[in-house]
Length: 402
Image 1 (cartoon, rainbow, N blue to C red):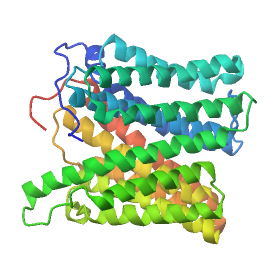
Image 2: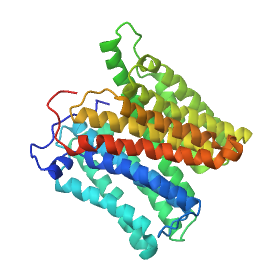
Image 3: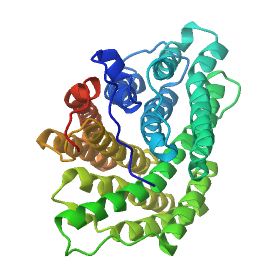
Image 4: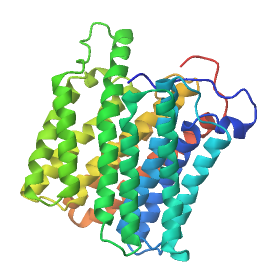
């Protein structure tokens, strides 16, 4: 995969025009804002400390908004920024981009207030964004004849399907909410396995060539990488279909081991001096760890299923999205691809959130305190992104080359 494209914002001084000049600007900002605010709402709803005007049950609303609300916005921001580089076409911007963002916002409102409207209306309003986004991506790829990235359309279709399954449960039509949420998480993890597996070694190779040419380069894509990705697909399909079956542990452990071997061949340890690059390896590392924890837990039942699952959600998805959002935002707005201390604090906060969420079941009487701190660290990480990167996504690109 080529690097995420860099292009100049619109020449207009109008802040609205600048904000709507590239997909990463509104979607990364709103994704981070919803992550920071939505999780505390989820925790309050789950703990019966607050009532929300939604027809979704607490656990289902939490899973839906993290996978399809927050996750959908991150995927949109990334793809709308990457596709122009893949196709050579201009990015979606201005009124069309504003319309897409409005559909996403409408979906969040529709799900949150779904008790106040017919279930079918709420579902239609929420599903409008992924449906239109599939059309936008498919059109761009087809027009640009960029068939290599056509699997991105399949991934978006899976996110739409998983979203639909959660709505069927909210409408009391089928008990498909849990499998729908797993479809969403599995799709996001597969995207990390594929895309993260391209950008992490590529950026590392470039950085080592410039800063440490004596170091051994990351291994090129080969048989191990193909096996690891195939094993990941098999493991995710098994987990989605049979999450509680003991036999599912085997493909998860095999995939975890293969992904871990793949990761260590990328020379991530050599990048520890640059947090903005090292965090890509850290984020990817949560995927094999999550597979190994879920598979091991299926065999030995050390903890409930939620704890190891959060290695994939808080760990892999939470960390990798922040890694990509900070890097892409700085690069596309003309800033150096270097993490200042506050950006490094974002990475520390999300790492602590993952560790505490996974470790909470082993903290005895401090379980709920660990959950609260983990949630606080998650909100802190994404809240810091909103505060620190708001100026970057709402102002014109700097003239310097990132």
